[in-house]
Image (cartoon, rainbow, N blue to C red; front, side):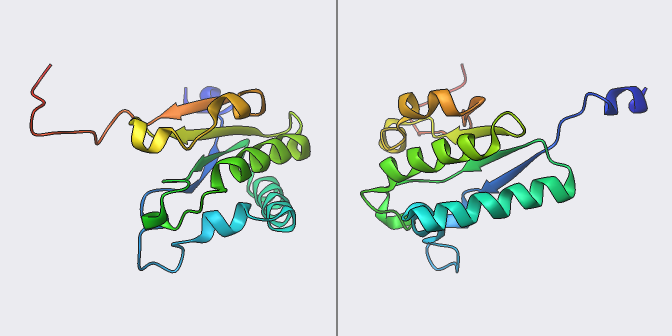
Length: 140
C-alpha cells in the first residue's frame, strides 16, 4: 500500500519558520535582505530551483515570520518585495514547481502580507491557525 501511495506523494521544502527570524540569531534579517534586490531574489530562486531538482521536491513553502516587523528583522519595503519574490519565483518555475506561502492568523502580522497581489502566483496559502491564545479565551 505504501508503494502505491508513493506514486502520488508530493514533497515540498519549507523555508523559514519562527526561529529563523528570532532576534539574536544569525538568520535574523535574512528574509528582508533576501527580497531587497532583484539580484538577491534571483540568486535565491536559482539556488532553490537547483536544490528542489537535486533532491526531488515538487514545491516550496515560504514561511516568513514576519515581514515588516522590525523586531523580527523586517523593513517597511518587505511587503512589496515579497510580492516581487513570489511573482519572480512563479515566472522562473512555471508549472514545474509549486509555491505556497504561510500566513499569520492575526491582523497585526497579516496586514503586511499582500495576499491579493500574490494570489495568482501561489498554489495555495497556508493559514497558521494555531498558537493563538489569550487569557480571555476558553474552550470552544
